[in-house]
Image (spheres, rainbow, N blue to C red):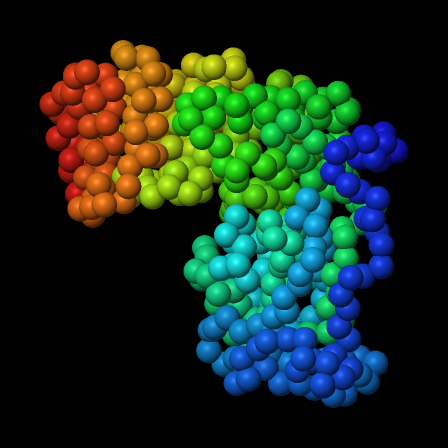
Length: 430
């Protein structure tokens, strides 16, 4: 099976010939002068150590008694933005705790299409070990690699870390093919760990075709495409907080520690498109991701799934939730579960899936065109026309006002009962 995977990879549009070549960057930290010339770092947290690695050579210590984000950084230029690269480093930790621990990442503010990418997080007191991160450069061929203690942005675990880590042997090369499964679609490219791909090539091509169809449905609903129409990469990574299934962006980061093989098998067995991946592709179609102001969007968790609902109905796709497979418009039945548990039960609870159900009721009455018109108007609005949207309730009603304009009547009045309106007002006020 692996040979078949490699044969498919060799025939793709992605240029692969140089994969597995020698490093394009390598730092041993054996020269203090080279370290000073090649790296930027906060002097108060970083110390060059001339004889501290396991072979008696140089390395760098990064330490902090308080939680923080301290790293040595190096900017790479002249990379190919169509290719996948791997940065590796060796870490030795002493009492590293909290946040993302000792970690490799890209400087987030320089990599806006995927600011969350990282290596596996290392904690505690450990011997020397190698960690890695696969990444796509920005469109100018640049990447600022960071090896450090803690992550500079707030994340689910707080990002910031404390303790001490020794860093050595940082290298960057094209990601080797020996453990990578690559498959190109029209709009989506899969970059998965080969040992997790346990289904036939035909099944993989079938799944990718359905993801391409979903992309086109999202485009039809919104009227625009993310990332200037460039392909969206889906990349397996170990560098995501526990509990996170995947993170949107380009690439979409798919947690290597979740049941990737099981999801692929679900498609092969049941034609299940994979709710989680459909959701993350949906996120990339947010106004913010495409490059528009979106003060009206009180939470894109709702809208990512709402875009998926349109794609499922348009394409007759299937996804499973709670061990049940929903086909096309049947997905409304899934969201009704949450409506029945909250607003439908008279509880003023702000549940996104329950609100999703009410938005689908509007669709049932007026059709999808009211949403297509509303999204096109909302995505075109300048920020100043959305001033004053300082609460989630105002944003919700602002959105419905634009749906109402497309419908020709007030959908708040026609599709929500007085009791529902009162409950939602209470829920948003909490």
